[in-house]
Length: 353
Ligand code: UDP
Ligand code: MN
Image 1 (cartoon, rainbow, N blue to C red):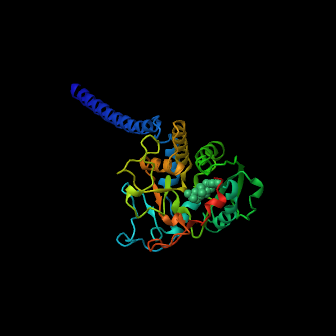
Image 2: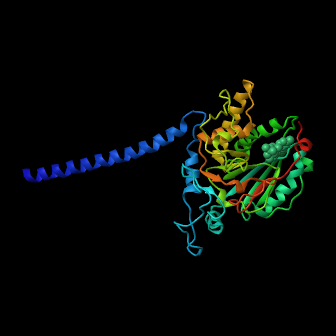
Image 3: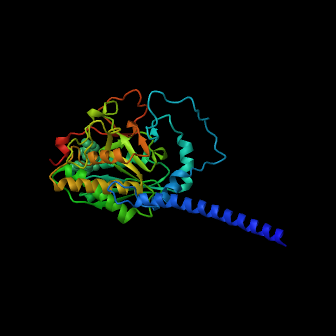
């Protein structure tokens, strides 16, 4: 019965070819996944973080679930703010008032049960800013969400008692004082790195690192969440990049050449997913220490290193200057709301040097 045998051979061959194609397809997609991980493993200083980040990112960032009962204003695809830029050239949103729906965002993030950590340093006389900072944070910062403030100070006895809402708390951590403000400011990166490693892993999802000499005036909430979040500095956002006070000495690890740089970001507020901020803090700290070994201190300490980092590692969300204004500056028309602002201070009175 040769014809039947022929048919069987044809069918077997066909199945074999099919299996072959299937195998190639599967191993191909594996290779894609592997090379993706491989990139994360690169030991480069500014390499991306390890693979767990992919899992965290997908849980918190990529899958945004809304509720079918929710009714809200129809979003428009042709009308919106025209006085400001709301997306970067690498397609990260720039958060301005009027670009987001706070109620919708809160509904999306509430079931995720997130915890937001905040680091704030109040060393020496800067302890005087803490009360106002914490009290206004209770009124405006992630209201209705779990927030854990970590206060770093050399004066733990002077930390004010603030009544916190349910799910929110303050932990006081002792740090040494210093007679140089530059050192206090710059050592924050090392302390943030250690805090994430020792206390926050598997506990918090996001972290924001904020200056204490500031207070909240308006909502700062879920619209600010992202992988790596940077805040545009209020002092330079209308300027040419040549005027940005980046570190300009090539010998420094914070060096940004003329003609480079996107925006000038604040050292006084940044954040994002824990793993992203960990990599940022570790890298800035390593670069800061490498500079110190050759006797260099970057122009604006950790702010310079942060700006170098963000130039290479683009933030996935950028917060407009609404998120860190300065009280002494009059409000420009594009700033429809001030959410967080640095208070006016007399440097000679409060800094150790
Ligand atoms: N800081 C501090 N004690 C000091 C100097 C600085 O605790 O003596 C901390 C504090 O959190 C402060 C931050 O470092 O907000 C950055 O310093 P500062 O606010 O003076 O810098 P500026 O915002 O004026 O550039
Ligand atoms: Mn400040």
